[in-house]
Image 1 (tube, one colour):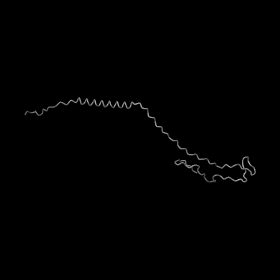
Image 2 (cartoon, one colour; image 1 turned 60 degrees about the horizontal axis):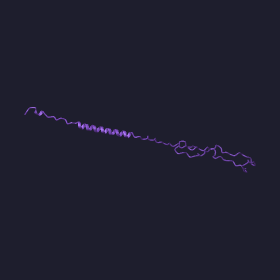
Image 3 (cartoon, rainbow, N blue to C red; image 1 turned 45 degrees about the vertical axis):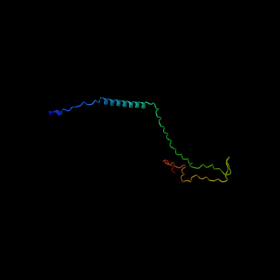
Amino acid sequence: MECGLAARTRVDRPPNWKLPIAATLVGLVLAAAAIAYTLVVLLDEQQPPPTPATVTIPAPAAAPAPAPTPAEPITPPATTPGTTVPGTTNPSSTTPTTPATPPGTAAPPSAPAVPGSDDAATP
C-alpha cells in the first residue's frame, strides 16, 4: 500500500448546463412576449367610453298650502226692510249670520299633516 493513495479522488467535470439554461431563457422570453402581445391587443381596442349613468333625483314633495281662513265671514250689506237692491230679493225678516267658528275656539286644520314632516299644522 502506498501512502496517500486514498487521498487522490478523481473529480468529474461538471455537466454542460448551457443547453438547459438557453432553453429556459427562450421559454421565458416567449412567455413575456405573449403577455405583452395580449396586453397590447386588449388595451388597444377602440371601444366608446361608457356613458355616465344619469341619476334622476325626484323633487321633494311640496306640502299642501293651508287654505286661508277669513278672519270674519263676509256679510251682505244691511238693507232696510221694504227696499230692494236691483237683482236681489228682499227677505221679510233679516237673519243674523253666524261665523264659521265660534269665538274663542281654534279652527280645525284645513289639511291633515303630512307624515314625516316637521311642520305639522298646529291649532
